[in-house]
Amino acid sequence: MSLRASTSQTIGPYLRIGLEWMVIEDLAPQGAAGERLRIEGKVIDGDGKPVNDAAVEIWQANSHGKYASPEDTQARPLEPGFRGYGRSLTDDAGAFRFRTIKPGPVPGLDGKPQAPHLVVTIFMRGLLKQLVTRMYFPDEPANAGDPVLSLVPAERRATLVAKRKGDGVLEWNVELQGKNETVFFDF
Amino acid sequence: MKSIAPYRRPYWNTQPDYLFPKYASSVRRAPTQPLVVLPHTLSEVTAPVFGYDDVKPTDSDLTRQHKGEPQGERIVVHGRVLDENGKPVPGILLEIWQANAAGRYNHRVDQHDAPIDPNFTGAGRALTDAEGRYRFMSIRPGEYPWRNHYNAWRPAHIHFSLFGPAVVSRLITQMYFPGDPLLDYDPMFTCVADEKARNRLICSFDWETTMPEYALGYRFDIVLRGREATPMENRR
Image 1 (cartoon, rainbow over the protein chains, first blue to last red):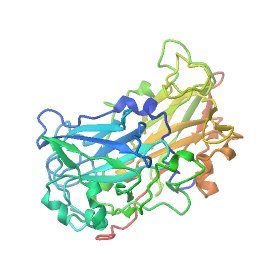
Image 2: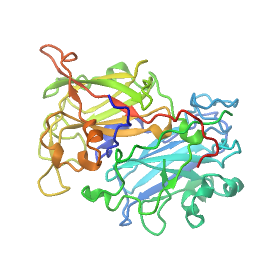
Image 3: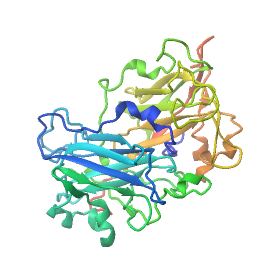
């Protein structure tokens, strides 16, 4: 058989049938250390309309900057019950939401810490492959030196940083096109 | 921290572009700004781990989720999940979903005038074993019309979602059936230029897996992105 990666195909409009059983909007179990946050956002298409059939998945380290993955060999503690994976399916208003803890900094390629961030993967009808982006945190001095943010044209960086909406609540919208088009990565 | 070997970038023409006007919904959803090339840091080469707390062995049989037998032709769909280096990928989560035998999804958005089957939901889950193998029991899905263009019909297909060992090896794809005359008219199937890549989305009939007087067997192997052999520190 060929050893080239299989071709991606769209998730289509009926994703709920396959993915709804594992919606995880609350990532942080009781007792997990770290700052608790709610993240709320919308996915908006090129006509300004809400995308009501997207799957938004997040992947993050715990508050110690440790991923619950065998690939992370750092000597940092795991949090029991904290997997670091979330999945929200957008509703009729295009909205997704997560309750989680703010991740700690994880090392970048040069070993220096990256600013705290979520890796975000988005699937929807109309996309033949996923979009990959990152969400960074507001009022975070480390953003200025983050090695990935610094690859993004300065005038577009704000699209990757959530806004503080209230006490413990962050807002981060994903705009697929238009003036404030979110930065997406070639991953 | 040891240095990190990045995952291979896609081979030319084997992955779709975001904008593919023949697929009408891509036009207002595809990014218009240039993508930023993402280095593969620890955040990109790690991924969630799933296990038997998440998935029951019975989740892989889509014909046994209700009181009665679903309508249609029973099929076994099995295969292996490998990476581009030929290594089996064990212990990863597969999620599948599909239309019923009449070509109708059990979903409020599907208004196609074909019957819902009360004995068929059309969703399944499995974990790959130590050799990267998986196996589902299901019903052959029906073809169905959609509104992308005049007289548009989707070929019979099963949606597959896979988690790999890394966030960047996450894959959602569709499996098609051999000899389906609708394939050549389908903008999803034809979305990549490389014909061989496209044809790898078609499963093959598998006589050895076929169960006498019970179910036809099909084999569908899936390849996830593999890692480069050498770590490249500070590579952009």
